[in-house]
Each structure stands twice: as structure tokens, then as C-alpha cells.
Length: 298
Image (cartoon, rainbow, N blue to C red; front, side):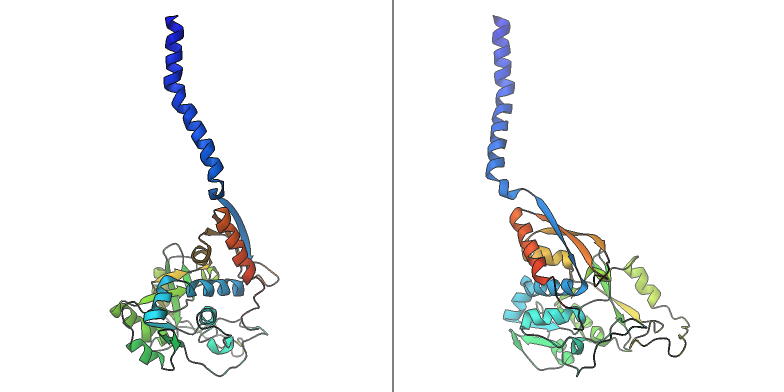
């Protein structure tokens, strides 16, 4: 009898909490089913990625705050053409919003010639017609400068921009003041710009003073031919790729599964996103909304 009693007490002491825990877990699972982590994905072309990144930058808290209380400068560039559209509304002239560019050396489709336009500069949400130099001089802490990049080192959260202008171009005008006055630098850049290797090493290599051979005359039709080696300027700030864009706009986390494609998906990316059912549904709706975005020059 004592053995039976001891066994009963043992089961009560040991098994009781386990049973209660199991019941609680089952109940919690039933209640929190909507919080279960699920996944989905989408393939985005270069233009589709640019559109999504533009939407995300416009919704960043630091950008919204600067639009309401300070200055936002959107420096011309391909991804920034979409940023400008999402911030100011309307349709920008994509061909006019380009400064430097990378084009095929023997291609048939180039950007049409367009009358240059100013960088997009806003003070307290209103577009102002002043030069980039004058706008940079007015920057203060908390203001935002949005500048794209030519190279991305995602692992180290660093980017770089090609420099062909002898005085540093738009980067030379703005970067010293951004740093000195503690303005925010937002760097919208697609994963298509990922480069192999450490970006600091690449930047140092690009600055080496070496003899550069020119390609044979007529071998390149590009405005900036590949034999004209630029220097590079490292950018550190708030990098916004497709992955950050999905997080900003939906709350889901994302990672890049693969890259490249054909039939218009050259330079494209395959993105996987994970989160709650609601977050992943939002991510699917978001990617669907940008899919079909025409190529940049169209």
C-alpha cells in the first residue's frame, strides 16, 4: 500500500506540472496561431527593386521628421529618381535625374538626352529652387541627405560611389558638411550593386596612381567607358536595400536567396521574407504592387 501511495505522490509531483505545462502550451498555441512564423518570396527586377526602395525611404521616420521640421536633399541618381517620386509625388524625368551611369559599352539602348534638372531639395516639405551647394551650407543636425551608391558591401554595411569629377562631384559638396553637422545620410541602393571583396580594400585599389591604358578608338559608345577608371568614396549611413525596404514597409524580415536572371530579370533578385502571417501577406502585397514597373529608361 505504501508503494502505491508513494507512486501516486511521485506522479502528482512530477507529472502534474508537465501536464499543466502541456495544457498551457496547447492553449497558447491555439490563441497565438496568428503569430506563427511563415515565409514567402518574390522575384524583383532592378526597376521593381528601385521602386520598392523608394517607397521605403519615403516612410523612414528620420525622413518624415526632416520633411516636417527641416531639410531633405535628394541627390540625383537612378534609384533616387524613384525616391524623389515617392517623396514629392508625380513623375520625374528619369533621364534628367541621372548624373554618372554605367551603360553597355556596345549597347543599342541608351538614356535619351534630356534637359538637366536640379536635385530635389525640400525645406519643411516644400520644394525649394536652390543649388546643391547652397542647400548643403544650410544643413543642420537632423536634416537628411539621400545619396545613392555604385558599390555595396552589405556584410559590413558600407557603400561607395564612383568619383570622376576632379573635386568630388556631389559627394565632395555634401559629405564633409553631413559629417561635420551630424546630418543623416540615407543610402538607397539595390542588391544588384553588391561587389566582391571588402569595400575598403577596393576603394584603396581604385585610388592607386597607375598608368591607365585607353581602349581602341570607337570601341565603346558609353558616356563613361570602362577604361576611364574612377576613384571611389566610401559612404556610411542608413543603407536601404530591398531587405530593409521590406522590413520598413511590412515588418517582415527578408534575405536574398539568389540573384540574376534572364528575359528582363538581369540584375534582379529573389527575395525570401519571413514573419507573422499578416506581415508576410503585406510583403506579398507590396512586391506585387511594384512588379511590372517598367525599366528605368522607359
